Length: 408
Ligand code: KDG
Ligand code: MG
Image 1 (cartoon, rainbow, N blue to C red):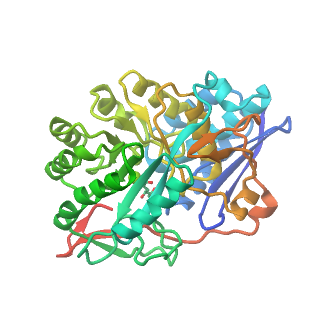
Image 2 (spheres, helix red, strand yellow):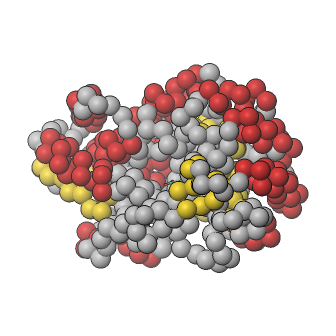
């Protein structure tokens, strides 16, 4: 069996999804997602210019050897662009494997450990009453967990993931007006004065059962993060995410020494080599890698297995930039993983998205159920894909009030 061709598509409804389709000489094809938010053309170019010409003629069933060939063969290892491109190939090869076996992917990992896997939604508010309304609507829809992000009183601009105006809609992470980023202004003191009390009010209003998560988005210094983690202990957060920039992993030890608030780290990591020490030293509670830019299923599964030895549960990244293809790969891992924690989940299921990526996967009452279709269980409609093209976009950059550049 041989790979006969592969194509890359960039575009989608409201997002620049990078979709890889690998064809074989036996008619079976596989799909992968290489979307790297706001840098989408780069993994696409790597696939087109180097990886696909090498893939053609390979036996698609040898997904491990193909992964090693590209990873070791690149010589310059890791990095989000490479790992996203390898990840897309890997997902597509697992999709082919599942179709050949006529089994949904979770069966190839070891079967199901649960029926429905818990997901969390994004609640955002320009202020606390607005945020409470958003949480309420998710609770009414049956969600068991929400991530809460709130506008901070007195902050000169909206901060991470918070819209400028009530009911603004649209994408609050990517600005599609061009590649020059907008600027957010950040003030740690205002945030520290406001956030613990806001989280406590959310807990009081919604009671003990709701799982409440909060993403600091790398904004604090280690000592500040320790103070916050300690202050919010009575709230009983499900997790506090990315309290400090992830590249300084010793910072996590300081936070850990001062607090028992569960920590979730790793959405910017792209290999086991960035998180193995955090996991082995049991400094985190949830690992946030994504199959998309952590080298696909083959590599992400190694991280999940290591985490399982150290009481670290999964909480795969699921921001809206992940297409239904990589989300399906994660949902299959979630159905299987003995150390599954939770899945970040945004409803992508607009009619346009469903038409581009048809599938029978279902979300019900805050739990995700994978379909029994072979492989990933998601298809890709190439005729629909012709409706979309690449649109340049950017994340904001963050500055302090005096102009100092800060962490987004
Ligand atoms: O592209 C950046 C987003 O993926 C990130 O800002 C989202 O922090 C994020 C999250 O937890 O979903
Ligand atoms: Mg995050």
